Amino acid sequence: MSHVMNTYARLPVAFVRGEGAWLWDEQGKRYLDGLSGIAVNTLGHAHPILIKAMSEQIGKLMHCSNVYQVPGQEQLADKLCSLTKMQEAFFCNSGCEANEAAIKIARMYGHQQGKESPAIIVMEKAFHGRTLATLSATGNRKVQVGFEPLVKGFSRVPYNDLAALQQVAHNNNDVVAVLVEPIQGEGGIRALDIDYLKQLRAICDERNWLLMLDEVQCGIGRTGKWFAHQHAGILPDVMTLAKGLGSGMPIGACLTAGKAAGVFGPGNHGSTFGGNPLACTAGLTTLNVIEQEGLLAHADTLGKYFHDAFSSQLSGVSGVVEIRGQGLMIGIELSKPCGELVKLALEQGLLINVTADSVIRLLPPLIMSQTEAQQLVDGLCPLIKAFLQP
Image 1 (cartoon, rainbow, N blue to C red):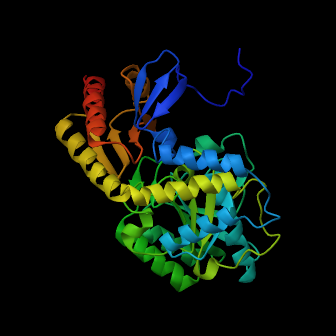
Image 2: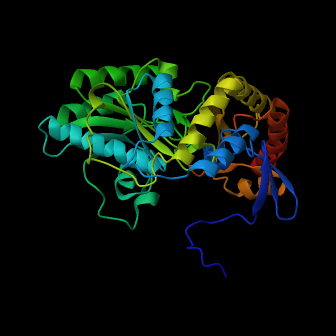
């Protein structure tokens, strides 16, 4: 019997090795990875350039503490800010830590504006993490149940609903920020309308709020641009990153610009492991390889292939509600709960995920080839059709 705390409903497989878009289990069976460790393994498995950079860094220095200057951290901050036009970066270890930092920035910003109880507008079906503050911001009761009392200071509105947001703005003078995912991952691969994002930026400017974008799952090239908000041509005040930034190495980041820049000073926030030399090597190498291998354009092209191929093979299939997403962030919504497809796909050597009960979620590594993409489509579509047959 395992002594690991029982917090996951694990699938009956253990992987021992990976290469590119493939994983092998203890029996030597090979699996095509359509999930990337839930949008983490940006460069797939065992990318030679990442292995070399990480091995060299381990041989030099893994950790030294933020009491001292960390040159690799400064290089990664410079790189991220050059890609985003943001001004500052704080490094931590995960997406929920990055969002926790964003929430703290909003509150401190609010207090600096003279508000005693700063409030943040968040969205229905959002997912921002599992710490007490981030699960309070999350729009999913399953995540919250049993952890009450929740953290106060969040006002929830429907996703993509500007009228509801403006109504909260009209009724609540304590609002200081909006926290939103440009594409909801856990919420079922749902994207904000481009026009909504542009208008949201205008409302935040007009009301002196912070626009805080959670790009933990949709950032780092996954949508075909470095960051999902860039499809709308806007700049947030705060942006959070994690998952794909380190290609498997735990790292998170909270970036600031405009009126959010400079809100934190020494002593306001910190992280023992955040921004350590090893994690920053992973982040910097990931970004450099994305550039060197042209993976933004590849993610865009491959995403269009996936959409067209699934649309073609599932055309007219009763029970397929919608195929949506952007780049290598794909959701196939079915008319009924479909969690059992995860195990059926596993038996066929395909790694997929189901979120929001009835949405098949695909988050392939950015290095996946079109041949491998075709294998994934050709393997998954018959399973979907068989599952939907009356």
